[in-house]
Length: 210
Image (cartoon, rainbow, N blue to C red; front, side, top):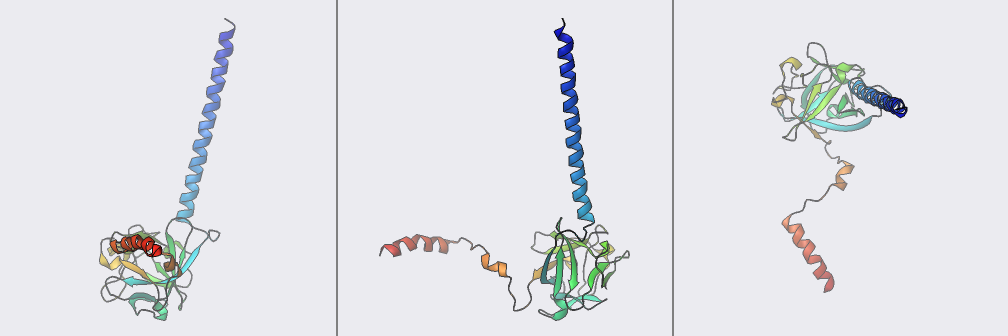
């Protein structure tokens, strides 16, 4: 009879320890999730950044996005100095800032959905999120104004973000390297396997035997 209270007390302590361990694990996972969401929405200067230089080819105009200063259009020529874009990619997610290499102005979207160029790109209005589409194009949606995309009409003029959707061709872009410049990573692309390459692989051992 004396063993029953001790066993009951042991079971109670055991369940109490398990309860606190479960609460601690849930709290730590919630804190980590909040940390990720906070840094994704508001990336700071301490985050590791990747900087690349390329052009944005507009599907509607057949030319490139260029930053002339406060004015931005999609009428830039391939290799034009105002069409060279410095793209800063944040560590968390696909958040990017786009700056003109020549003008040193960032592409930003104000509260009215208007596309403007600003010399300071640290505000959330100058951050866009990359969305990779099935047609190999890329869409850039504002990180601050959800559902508002960077887009240009057929004349190369910016469209208001409130009048854009992901399905519109005006918001479709393709990353291109400047004319005459190749990406050094292209040297390490995998060679696709075709019937011709399979045949060449089968013939190589026979050639060595002869």
